[in-house]
Image (cartoon, rainbow, N blue to C red; front, side):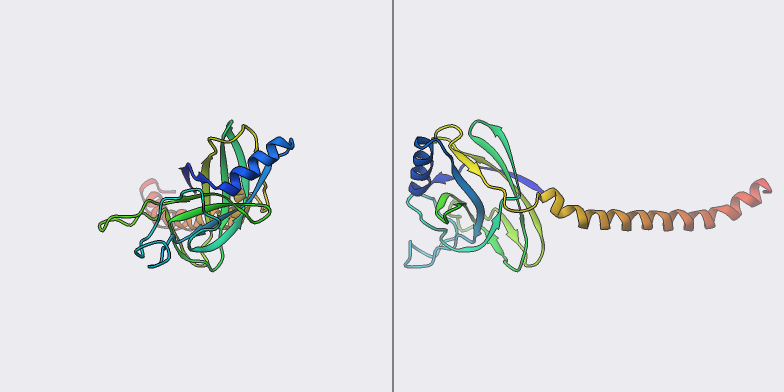
Length: 198
């Protein structure tokens, strides 16, 4: 699991939700992480580039291809939160944009890789179809009232989600080590017996 530190642009809808919630003594609730290719098609916002610079006026990702419930949350500082999610399923693509979605479906915040030069393609990571991937993001929420945003955990902890596959892998490694040890014992035992007359 890799950890990324993102400082997304809080959208107008996100700012309004946080301020409204804070004034009412409650919190705006972020429930999902959305990922997209960030592919800006020619004519829509420009020249068919990959990635863009968010302005805060966004209401959706430019090219979203998957959403995942938040699996774990850890408060690191007053306005910094570590969020993890298990990205799985058939969705696939190069991730150049990430959105944080409120429980009402509104886009709370958005991050995108800067438009690349001809020599680079600034994808954050590659999501492969049907290959689960644990994602951990440190989300910096500067410019909002302290404790005005709450992350809603809607999926099992990423650690629990990957425990099963890791236990299977660990069992296979132990079996492999045992076979290797037994094979080495069978190879070395005659030599030891011949040397020490056991």
